Length: 536
Image: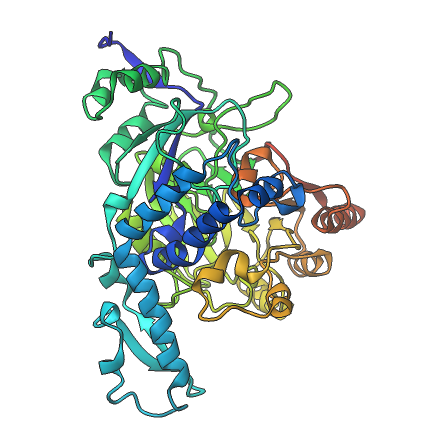
């Protein structure tokens, strides 16, 4: 029986966002990229599983194949996947027609005489795209098209009924690779599925209950459940809160590494959370890991470096929405299929106060400043503008967070150094063996790339030779390697598993050793780390 006694949501309860039974990442929010992923990723993976289940089962047991297009289930689910294919084809009829229309428009654009006027061409635009695109030339007279992205969010192609959440308790960091494995509703009694849009107040209520107790009855009244589901749902709550956060003292800057690319920068009056990805709890006594229990009461600014699934994680952000006051995101290239607007996507799922930043623009963030710095690479040479490194000034300290940026042209950072001045600390990613272009962007391409070209255009971060250039230019006091995807809590979304011989480990070891030889404090971060700097 439920009582009115206030309870907390247990720290290991996962609120997992789903789009049409697939793990929801940013390319499943923007309608056009969602259409391409349903048509060119989800359906092919599921059809392949139905045709060759044994191949998928073998591949998921091979560490070298982790992150590949293989469905990972503990036992056979061929019939359920067949049913999901049929359900997908019916429910996503509009999105599949939209994807076909993109294919047709690509052919029209490719076959149009180079440089010739577009007079009469709008009449040939496929019906699903009429009124939603503009035909444009670049200065080399190559014809392309621009998506009028806000209109897509107001059209039938943005359907919140495709959004849902599954809620469950986790006792480990392990999960199947989520970009390849759909959720089967009702297949696991301990995993509860609810048809909640991502902007639902119920998600906010549950998120708040990680930090502030309220009667469980308040949530039960808003959800439709069977008696069996109610019994499972009751196990998600506890009268006891696990809370370890302490306020940052006056005259200090505190920087906490939460794992992967997630960093919390605090002064006594301002908190800034970069690329939020927060572990649920420590599952082993030996594990060093900050969790939700270590977050402040309010997050003044969330800062996003780029639109990849391991840097902007709805699973982390949605339960924190009630805490977040402002969002700082890089501005996208308006209307480019491969570069959907982060701002539009986040507004569509219930966030507000979103600030778009461009290169060398600065936002005053409480008693801190956030400046956008050019970000090269890690996007397979596609024209993607929604990516920024960030220089954060706090308490007289300048901290540069480069995420996965690759130093293709060091002269750019010579100019930046002349403009921004001294940089005390650099945090840089060195995942220099990234996946090929098609791994993430394949569904968006008009044609399949030849294998050698695909392999040559990778989602790479900096190697040693590139990273040391930043050290030479900015002359920092401290250098830290982060965003390596090493922590177990990241594997389900990154699929990364290193050995001591892995090139990113070898290259980052070289950087750390060279920095130490120069009397620059340096290490490769893992798990959790706190930095405290006193200022007057």
